[in-house]
Image (cartoon, rainbow, N blue to C red):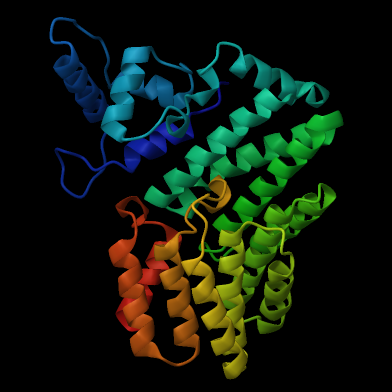
Length: 342
């Protein structure tokens, strides 16, 4: 049975209908929109595409449509081939290489791992437009695949495979938190830390530790939050943007623990780190670590310090400067609540 293309289906269901208010595009409506776009591009050529074809793509019966259909889908859905589940066909042998690697993990190579990393990047951006529950099944499928690949990888490919497995474990831990799946979050994040330590990857280890500290904050487990926020902040080898996130998190933990003076000092330090962020961006795992995001982090610290008016102001400033495409993300929703209630 072919593997379903969940990314395409989710992208369609995340796109507002142009016909029915407060609804998403149906397969037939998507096909009609693609044909209309193609007609605008080349009015002298006839194309065949309908809702049945969309269904075949979503069920995985057809893995990769023709170039012009892909172009129409990208235009209508506002997404890349990777975000629509078509990345495997970018090179003729990519799908074959990944399938072979899954069956024989010792044969995995860097190209196959880059393919999975590209799928993960598309999935993260799809999550921003939908929610954690929607992308969870696909993320779990990718995770299981990479764990299998990492188990068989050898030589200089193994650190890359294990690092990617750590990132997918970390991502599943992150996705579990807004769903209140606290045990799953803890299990996946523990796995991410172990895998990251195996290949001495400070970025992935610190991210997983900080996410587990975040879990502690969300569940009022302050002992865990305090210990793990300190651990996440300890490694100075990480990217400055991640270190800035850990600095704000540390300030929030201190404030909630009643260490007001230390929290204010840490908050001042974190604000200074934002002002000195380098132009170089983090990898896809932390692409949202930009100044507008950190305004929200500052708001959470201010709320923990009891300054609700300033917390609301920081939340509003965050939302005003945040990229529009992130408005439905989990972290954006929490900042919206902050802007409303402080």
